[in-house]
Length: 615
Image (cartoon, rainbow, N blue to C red; front, top):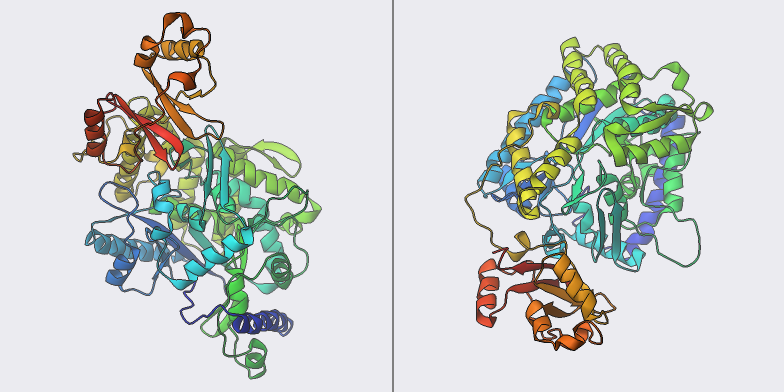
């Protein structure tokens, strides 16, 4: 989420000055390009590792500030949620043992994070979406206490003008509304950076868009969200909806999403991409900037383009153009933002080498993507790959092909050539791209999660399944064996700690009745499903009462199947609990009131039911 902007006031005076700095930055970038002042003689790679902090029960642990203080390393920084951290790796020149160097640094920093996290009773986990995350961890109290994050939340909510809505359909469906941007915190990624020569930027950028779908499909690792099986890479849908500031209207009108793939091939220069984003999206964050980039340039000082960099950090293209300064020299790079974190560090390094090899090995025939491929074809490939992963059937240059065939027959050879062209060590090429080849043939992290999720779901409660899955992922990550070699979970790693909250053991797939339903229907539903109590909702979808078999037995038999309605005999004053009610409390309530079940509610909305059978 970028810099903290500790001194920002976010007021009108600051905003007016910031706008002028942003316009000056665009002019300065154009001058840098015209005068050939942007570095083009070297190619560097870099990465950002996002990670989750989990407690000993493998649930989100809001300890990022404490862990960050203990780590005391400038490579580490905060993220939006207090259970996430980010590691910014150093850039390395693309040659010889560069991937081994990245891998060594990442291993060293992750080991440091694990050591310091353990001092605070937490563990480090690499995963695209943490399976055990729940709506409980999406409240503002889990937002990292830094002014920029609060301001970002405030401004995006104001832009939206309503609560954020989430609706994702996969095998299951998740529909939810939320009052903050913390849905975004469910996502963790392994962001890749590649320096691009200015003269080749547009060709490279268009190529990065064309290959995004197939690359994503073989890297999927985020199939689950809040216990629902959704897309193979659910982050793609989740991230767009979590930061969607577009207003819902009755009018049919074009609105550009703040998170997105883009809408067309690029044709001129990188400045045109930035101009397009500034034209399409509101400025949501500002900061005080002391010197004009144009004045710095006139004084032969390399400008950092601070306003442009801050603005660019609030527009979330899956392939994002970036300007930066290193060793006093300005450069351009493409940031790949769609690769998920995990399943292991070695899988991430393989993804990194594969993407960099593909980018640098681009055959000449792909220099002008607009002449050989419709942009909509590339965009649809990206969405389809996010949905179905390795099983995707793509359209490549107008012809249908499977993702597996495209990766194995065309993309891997290109990647080999790209890495060899930059004299990357052959052992690293073979080792890392060999993992991509094996994963393409055998399975991704998303497939491993889905297979085990379905298997465990047949024998365990949903919450137990999610904990077991997370725990096994953590254990497997310690071996650093690539995910295609992971074994299925046959014997769950049992935990000695007992369940604590109602939400961990409640039943969530419920039969429900409505107040105006007739008793004969209620009797049939309860008999068919062998249930002794059933919640009743009103027309607004709120809990209105509870119908039990004892009430039906007490009803005069001649009215049972004719005239009576559910509302006539249901309990209207229902004893309820919340998902975070302690199980001991729920048990005591059942004993005190001599009842066999308790509806579980969030506000007036029914989300589950807990019975003596569950206990």
